[in-house]
Length: 153
Ligand SMILES: [Fe+2]
Ligand SMILES: [Fe+2]
Image 1 (spheres, rainbow, N blue to C red):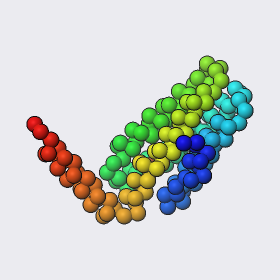
Image 2: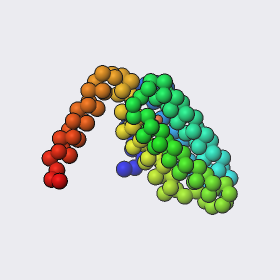
Image 3: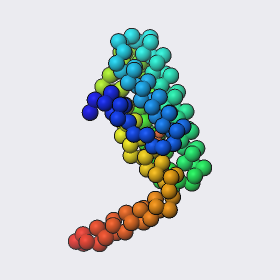
């Protein structure tokens, strides 16, 4: 899907601080991608994006820790690998003096949109109603056990 369409239809998760940070991240990624290539300017913009993403993840990680969110380790890992990808892209542009790889940037945008719609949405759901979240997790575990039990040995 065209990321500009993703941005227009972007779901708000009901946590104003989180929603504002997500929107800003996606807007700056999309702005960088659609602007004319200029290695010096691209590097400056990309560095600013990496710093924004790093601080968003640090903020969200702290929120998950404070809420003792049970699925936080998996979520931390996803943040960590995305930050590593973006940092690699920045390294190529800054040290390798290579033009910005637009496909790579597009992949980062796609990842951000998917992450927000899945993992972040899940965390927002937990914050909104922990009891229902717990019950649904239990249900998932039972369903999984049932599926495993149905498999032949
Ligand atoms: Fe996240
Ligand atoms: Fe997030």
